[in-house]
Image (cartoon, rainbow, N blue to C red; front, top):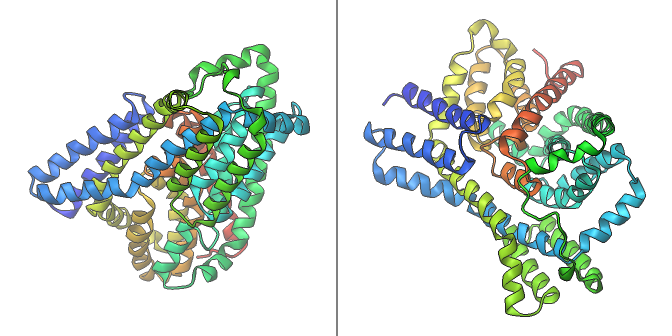
Amino acid sequence: MSDTILALLGFATVITVIVLLLRNVTVPALAFVSVSTITAAILVATGAFTLDEMAGFIKEGVKGVHGTAILFIFSVLFFGVMTDAGMFDKIIGALMKKVGNNVVGVALMTCLIAIIGHLDGGGASTFLITIPAMLPVYKRLHMRRETLLLICVTSMGVMNLLPWGGPTMRAASVLGVESNDLWSQILPMQIVGLVLAVGTAIFWGLQEKKRIAKLGDAAVEDVGKYDDSDSEEKNNELARPKNFIFNVILTLAVIIVLVMDIFPSYYVFMVGCALGILVNYRGKKLQNSIIKSHASAGLSMASTILCAGVFLGVLSKSGIMEKMAIMMASVIPASLGRFLPVIIGVLSVPLALLFDTDSYFYGLLPVLISVGNQFGVNPAHIAIAMVVCRNCATFISPVAPATYLGIGLAGVEIKDHIKYCFGWQWGVSIVCLVAGLILGVIHF
């Protein structure tokens, strides 16, 4: 099977999955595993890969996401236990006294927490810090969870440009420069991005304020559409107000160890869950009941993440995504060669839905650099456009495992998350690109 056919099959596979997700034809887990299996069968039947090779690709793909799946199970359990114990009730009560019914203030607080939380460059840890803290406030004020995610992913996309962030390090390694050197060039665009992140919080906070005022009591209509893992009816028998200080210290300790990146994230939550359950709930029967009450949400999203691993294994580990990247680069007309940074910058957000991070930077970037060399384009400008503009869509991409952690914690479906955020994130990326051109970071 030729590289062109492999690339076309790859595009067909990704597009099919995205269409199935957006049209709500089936649940994400089934979409990923069924479409991937059909693609794998075609690849084996045509002799492109042997059955053993394909099995190896799938194994590697699942291996690459199993940590995120385990992390989700135990993070949901941990924060569920803290919620049952009443820790968040007191914290949210204190927050509500500070912001009252100030919807814009809540939106700005979300932005600030996400920016600070993403200083470590970890998408999973930022979601785990921001969403559990802010979701109860959004529920109480009847703000949409999609708005919570939009503000989060905008802030995270901008902060992900730091030199220790994955995309910046990958791009720097391809260019053969230090990530700090690349970041120093990106910094003016990142500052613009931070302004846009704050602007996003203010704008969408105002939108939520208008919406809530217009709907009035009808604002609660959104409650039924969310995939909530928790019951809105509090079980006061599970509240442990006397353990509030311990629970806060435990939660802060978990977050600090996560940021320090000493142990695997899922192990940190395993230990946190064990301590939280043992201290707050005594007796095997009650402990078992607590675990079962949160098992459904954890296993549901974990299954989606693992099935997404099958999808990534078939396309990414097999090298098909790299062939897709080469095909993408080959269709750029020679007459537009010198405008390559602008072209790839404009297309970065849609491409983020098709390519995982490694394929995007290790597959597509080297090919585009070689194309750009023929037209005298500075490789750094191509890399900067790709890093800055793609980062805006990193956490709405269905091929990014952290995306599923975010939507799972918020109780939002992937199709709603993409529909709600895609246009805005694309707009933010284009504004950043224009800022880069005006500030001289990128030129042609």
